[in-house]
Length: 289
Length: 332
Image 1 (spheres, rainbow over the protein chains, first blue to last red):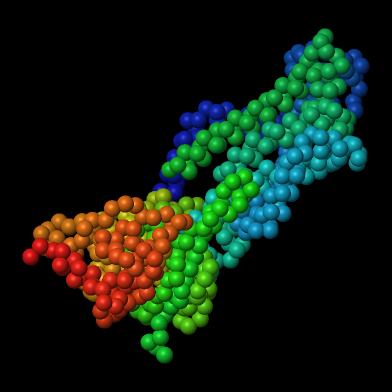
Image 2 (cartoon, chains in turn cyan, blue):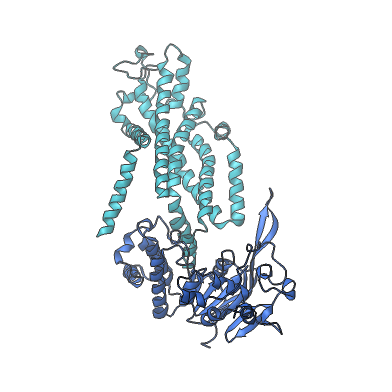
C-alpha cells in the first residue's frame, strides 16, 4: 500500500530537516548526554561514594586533574561525580514540575479557550494573578513558611508554572474553536471531550513541546537558584546550585569549586534552549506546509 | 403530512454587536440577517444567492444550529432547530474543514462513532463512504495535506453523509476549487442527493452554478431576502431590480448567452454598510428604478408570477412592473 510508505517518508523528511538544523542537533545531543549522564551516574561517576557526606581531608581543594577532572571540594569530594548526581536532582525537578504543571495548565487552557464565558473569566483571571507573582519570590515564600527542601521547592514552582501553559493553550484554542473542522465535529455530534482532546489538543502539541523543552532549562535554573539561596536541596544531596553556593566561599583561589557546577548548569540549560529553538524552527515549517 | 416543509425560517434575524474602545463597549450593531422567511421542501435543492456580506453564511450557521437567531424561529421537520446529525454542513474552505493532525480515516471514524456504528464495522463503513464520494479506500490512511482541494472536499462530504443527515447545507462548497474540479463535485452532489434522498441548501455567489443545480432560489441583499422563485422563473424573468443586476453581471462567452441576460443599467456605488442601513427599501440607493415610496417605505413581498415573489414596490399596486419599465427603456 502506498500510504504507509508515504508516512514513513514524511517521518524521514522530518528527520532530514531536523538533522540539517545545527541548533536542534547540538541541543538534542547535549540533552541526551545529560540525561544519559544522570541515568547512569552510579556507573559513570569515578567516586560514587562521594555523593554523601564523605570527608577526605587529604584530598581537600585539589585542582582539576586526571583523577579529579573537575577538582575536589572543601571536604575532598570529587566534583565531577557530584555533578553527575546533581543532574539527577535537576532533571527530576524539571520532570516533576512540568509533569504536573503542563497537563494541568493545558486542560485549563483548553477549557477556558473552548467554552468561554464564566469558565474563561475565572481561569484566565486566576492565571493573571498567578503570573503577577515572580516564581522565585513564590518559592522563597513557600520554602520560608514550610521547610526548605526539594519537595517544597517543586511545589512552589509547580504552583505557578501551569499559568504559562494555560495562556499558551488558551490562545491556540481560541483561534481553533471556530475552525471549520471543530465546527464539523460539533455538527456530527462528537463529544466535548473528543473535540478538546482529539481535535484541538493535537494541534497544540507542537507549541507545547517547544515550550516544555525551553521550560526544562528555566526550571532547572530556578531550582539551582533556590538551592544557591539555601532554600532548595539540602546537603549532603548533591545539587548543582548548592555546590555553586558552597564553592563560592573559596573564590578566587579554588575557582573550580563554584565554576565547574556552574558550567554544568549552563550546559544543561543551553542544551534545552537550543533544542527548544530548533524544535520551534522545525514545527514552524511544518505548520506552514 | 409528507408535504409539510422540511425546513421553515420564520422572520429570522441575527445581529452582531460591534465592540470597540478600551472597555469593549457595544458601539453599534450589524444587522447580518433581517426578517428572513424561507421554506425548503423535502428533496429539493434550495439555492441562496448573494454577494459577500449578504448574510448567506450567517443563515447557514443558524440553520445547522451553530448560531442561535436573535429573532424569529427556525423549524426543522416541524420542530425548532437544534444541532443534530440530521442537519449537516459542507464548509467553503476544504483546507480548514479537516483536522490537519488527524488521518482521513480518523476523521470519518468520529462521525461513524457519533452515528452509533460499532467499532468493528467502522473500517468497512469508511471504505463504503470513500467509495460513495469516489475516493480509493486507502485514502483513509492519508492526512489532509496529502490530498488535493477537491479530494478534501469529497472527504468533507463523506463525513457529512456518514451520520445519515436529511438536510445538507452546502456553504459555497466549490468556490475554493478549480473550475474543472467544481463540475465534478457538483455532479457528485447531484448523484448523492438523488441516491440518498437528501435535501440541499446550496449557498453560492456563483449564479451559473446555481442555475444548473438549484430547484428554487432565494436572493439575499444586505441580510434580507429580496426575491424567491423557482430557478426557471427567477432566471427567466427576474422580478427584483437587484436580481436583474446580479444576473446581468454573469460573465457570458457567446452572443446567445448575452441575449438571455436581462438588460439593465449597471448599478453604481458600493453595498451600503450593514451597520447603517438605508431607509425604506434597502436597495433604493443603488436601484435604477427607485421612485417615491422606495426611500421611506419598506416593501412587502409581492407575488410576481407563480412561485415567485419579490420585495419591490414596482410590483405592488399600480406601479408598472420592472419588466415593463425595462422593456420600455429598451430600444425597439
